[in-house]
Length: 265
Ligand SMILES: NC(=O)c1ccc[n+]([C@@H]2O[C@H](COP(=O)([O-])OP(=O)(O)OC[C@H]3O[C@@H](n4cnc5c(N)ncnc54)[C@H](O)[C@@H]3O)[C@@H](O)[C@H]2O)c1
Image (cartoon, rainbow, N blue to C red; front, side):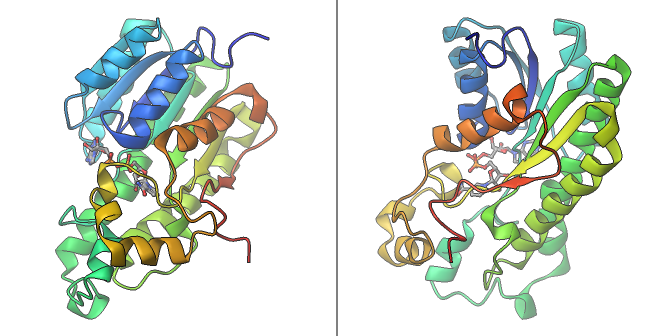
């Protein structure tokens, strides 16, 4: 059997780090050329894609800026001629950048809604929801123009389904990504462009850096994770691969939850 993404062109936002980087690497191993959009430099990701024998292009992109999202897709088309797959992984845990589980474990009430300022709330929604919307729109327009279908994968979170005290902006944003995925999937269902989401559980990336050394925070995370371990970014990338590839050709508008057994109850 050939590789799952042989000869395809993928755009990955948030591809400089964590889940986005692991996804870019896996896609390259499966035969795709990869365009990485991120506000941070992505030299390491570019090197991983090239090591896998495929071509990579980094385009500095702030996904909250619609022109930059459009330019990201335009750069992919200019370099590789088309876009077949898009993964929207750019995201933040909180406006302050600190992980939600560590805030909660520290017993801090500062991120509870009654203490939250509107700006901090809006900033997370801007990056996690509007950024995904702008990314998806640019991808979908290109895929529709090509007329040969495509697959868009949005990175939501298991927090799309679980209310976590102290994490209102994040939970609301990820529920928003889930619903955005469903609406866009519905609108595009007859066009051959599929849109799905991946909702990871706690995954060892820079977003939750330090959690392994924070017994209280790790304990809170593991208390809702029956497998009793953090996920690896490669395990989330595998879910992205399934949804990006033809293996999921009859699947659209779905949230796949690689989350270590969350939601078994
Ligand atoms: N790590 C987890 O436990 C976990 C769990 C569930 C969901 N997620 C989601 O997975 C996605 C990837 O997170 P990660 O864990 O790999 O974290 P990460 O911090 O390692 O990677 C996030 C990347 O997004 C980029 N980014 C942030 N804001 C951006 C913007 N405005 N424009 C462009 N790029 C931007 C960052 O520069 C970074 O490279 C996020 O959407 C996150 O919410 C992570």
